[in-house]
Length: 430
Length: 175
Image (cartoon, rainbow over all chains, first blue to last red; front, side, top):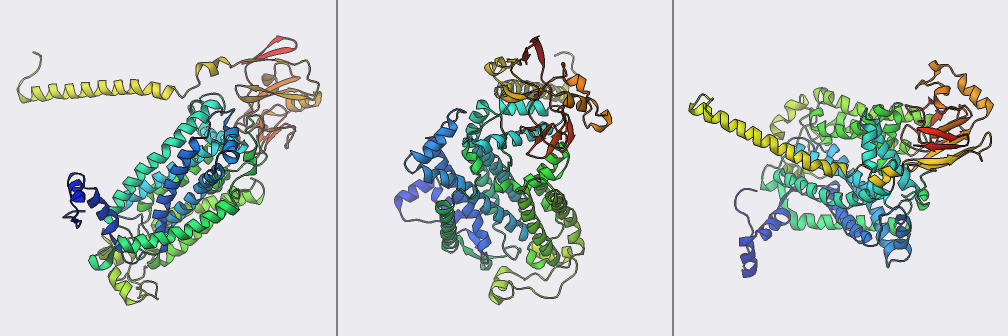
């Protein structure tokens, strides 16, 4: 970002504007000539997809708010009014509800990509933090959005999740009453959740801006996990990655459309089509699928406070990941032990998700505890892997690896060299 | 300011004091302004005003329960059978995670009045179910006995007994 921008124009109006507000220069530097590693694969499409989903959610959400009434007596009916009476209301609501799920799918893949290729390591720690903050904000937004239709799952989901705070010693009950604005989830709760649900996406938008700022400062990581060493390692973002992102969007859009038009309620719960009843809890309450792994961790611990602590810890531990991982090599391609560990972690997350959706009895209790232990074990053994793991030889540069061959997994493949730190020291200083 | 030592140190000290004093006052002012923004989230006056109800018990036969809505929460009023009362009284205190005598939980032993909100995460337990013939919470599997005391599962505390008084033999006021 230092030095002269390459942006030039012969158009007098553009020049006049750009001299006063360098918006054309900004766009040119950010998404046109922006130097991007040559070797990004399709896992790097998820960032732009997440951005698109944020826009889809904001646009459909603003429209839904024009027809929705945030009142305990009217919310359910106004949601049905959107579904039945408003022109294309069904489309917009299904787009918004399934859009949340699609957003989470994309973001989960984005996070796993970061884990696999070591995108959280220096100098991208703050970039990683911003991502976690976005993820947490997304969870809060999705949770409050799910409350708005005021069905049974809305009501009882809100009750259970807000009650998590009652586990805090002494002030817990006071905090829950404060969150509710009453003595149970009721009208004040719904009204403020609506307000915050409208607010938070714009907060997310702001954090996304910081996320991209940090990203553009040190540029994208890449499947080799080595730094960009010169212009020969990069290609301009446009047209190469604009086209690749658009292609990804077309595929993603197709999948989204299939869900939207053929299975719009697949990821929902039938109980949420029953109006909220504060006196009857549905027999089997589960959160939306994207919360299930965390829900499984909550239930795995047979103590209320410790269960809540474990659930939040499972999320917050991601903040210290850049320091838990002691290896200087970023990409799992060159880390045979970490690679196995990563896949074990991934499968374990799926197991947690599965268990989170099952009733807490019999085998699911044992399984949930085991999977919770394994989840945290991943973070505990990570510091030691860097010690004894012998990483594969890193390629000299992105350009050399790309030119050398396409077949052997991006080059390398040589004999292992020394301990992780020593092998990568000269290669990986950011 | 005749009490100070003078010289450069004098000015620096005076300035430090002014900075700290101004900053401190600013922080107190900001906190004072933030408090209304925080406190508006607490229950409003109309919500607090609706905090007690009266219930007529005369229509509830032995072995029957009713659920009434108090502060948006279900309150269970159970006309307990003699078997339930003796079962609740016979439990040794050492068996209870949250020890409390049945006599302390029911002013008149035949009338058990409970806030029907699981002390785990707030679901409504189902009556006359579970391993202790009291209440069972379907959400995360907490079992309560015939006195509404927690016996098994993740809930830490007994189902709370709301404040209530007998207005006469057949009428109570909850809250």
